Amino acid sequence: MACHCDDYSKAQAGRGLRGIEPGMPTPAGTGLNRRAFLARSSGLALSVFGGTMLSRLAFEEGIAAAAGSSSPVLVSIFLSGGLDSLSVLAPIGDPRYATLRPGLKLSASGNPDDVFTEDDRLHWHPSAAPLRDLHRAGKVSVMPAVGYADPNQSHFTSRHYWEVGEVNPFGRIGWLGRYLDRHGVDDNPLQGLSLDWNLAPALAAADKPVAAVASPEYFSLDARDVWDSGLRSRLVEGLRAQGGLATDDPELRTARRAAAQTVGLRGQLAPLQGTDAPWQSAIAYPSENGFARRLAVLAEMLAIGLPLKVVALDANGGYDTHDDQNGSLPGDLAEFSQSLAAFQADLEARGLADRVLINVWSEFGRRPEENGSGTDHGAAGLAMVIGSQAKGQMVGGFPGLATLDEDDNLRHTTDFRAVYCSLLEQWLGVDADGIVPSAGSFARPVLVR
Image (cartoon, rainbow, N blue to C red; front, side):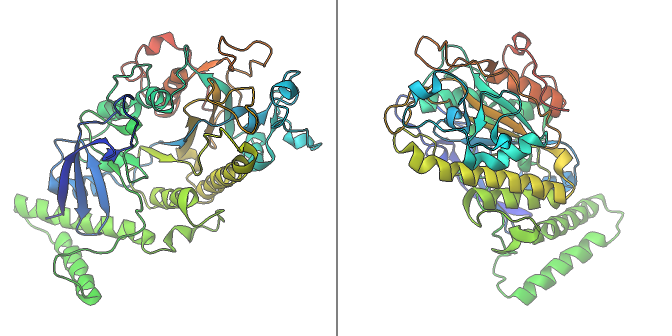
């Protein structure tokens, strides 16, 4: 067999999907079949969700057959907790800023490079200098006030809206899952990959298989009752030889093709082997753990040709800064910015940058008025599209602090669903209609060159 599976279950909050609080919307993906797959040729363990047509044999062969694609890849990065957009891009030039944030306000650094080039009221946070530099290089499209009408200030509900691509608490399919249902395949679970122990609900599809894997760099050749490394090497060589034999028998030809694909997949995954493997690039990442490591592994997975289409992962840190915001935010923001800049540089060094676009989002922004040492849940927030093929122009504009919404929160100037429509059509090359509900009612901001 090419693989085996066990731990069959149904995905639900806290088991295969992120946990939620009682009374919150049921996560997208709830009820999907969840199976633990192990590729025997490589030991690569995946939690595979959905894909009722995915057989145990097709799992490994489907990945191998789809490998080597040069199609565009969308990477979705979520900042959990509600990022304070008015710290990342501080409206130092707005007359109300100092009044609303007497303790948390930033002061102008005196460095002209810190001024946001598309709106001089806004200044980059010092910890976001790597993002500033990417923006000045034309590789970041900034949406300084993204959101939706009648915003919900619950972490779970607002995040759910972003994940399903509609303001609907009953949505069960993720917006990227709907994309895969229409444009994915039946036998490649890596087409929608969550770099986490749990599936990102945005990837939850109705019919097509998707996967979650927390540490793809840790694997070894797995064969039942074979422990000696020399025997394992001989096993691989035997499979390789079997795959190369010619035959007129159609069943044997199918088996040998599968053997060749299995060995090929193991060879592709080999660069990920071991704890030091993700650092093959000459690019220095800010950490060898967590978010930075997952980005480094992702760059390696792309470089070896694994058939990824849409990838989701959480950023480092927690951005629910109700208190001690000046204590926690700078460090989290610095690691996040440095990690993203390193990932972009890594992609460029590998010649992959024109294939990858990064979508950065959070469930909402923070209130413009501080609460003393922090900020509470707000409405419109910050989103970014990053990459060599990003248009590099601000979308929607900053609405200013003079006229806030009825709850004294920042008004949104860009709807998050309009962003999704543009990413689907301008980057993934598909019609947003049928993927984003009521897609025709949203403008299409230019996000891609």
